[in-house]
Image (cartoon, rainbow, N blue to C red; front, side, top):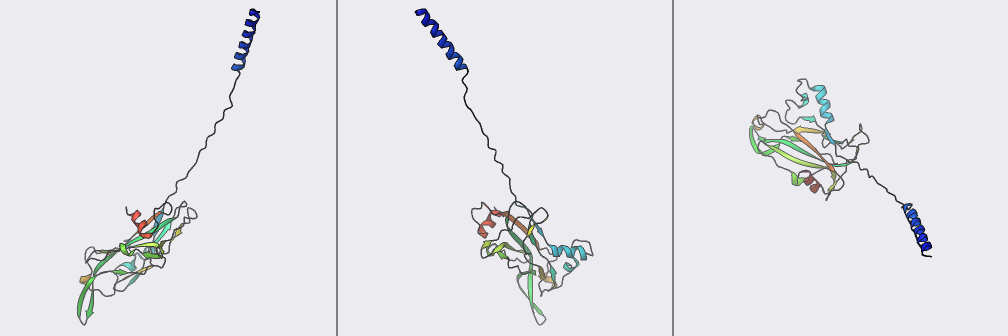
Length: 226
């Protein structure tokens, strides 16, 4: 009897080993790969009318259109700074800074000129699509420059410059202005001799439209200058 029990126990133990060796577990794995693309802000500053003048009337080959050389008081020349969004990824908020050379101006009573305060040598009329940040204006000094900052937008609100339709079709703002005019009342002593060339410097700025802590024009301009 004990012998039979021993044999039976051995058979059961063998069966357990056999079954145990055949045990398998259901397993599975899965991986998600999330793909992201990085956008960009890509702007250019162009002056189509000025460029056209330069290509057709620069007789002296000095990169200055003839219309802008030896200007007389009150004379006007085409100049049309325009910002283009060439990025096909993102819209942008855009700004322009304009630096204008200054000089003292005069009034003439009879034959006697009277010197006035320093004044910008050139005037222009901003397009209605642009608004000046008045608190960023820097007034003239005797022979320095005046600075003006404009944002693309109106009523204290920035207008997004849409992304480009494709690589060859940028989206453009209206020109900030279309022409500049030299002051009408000057005498030679009022025009600084150095440098002889009077430069109007226009600088374009662009920034993303999403993810900004504030979108008020003054705050966004601050982000660009920090």
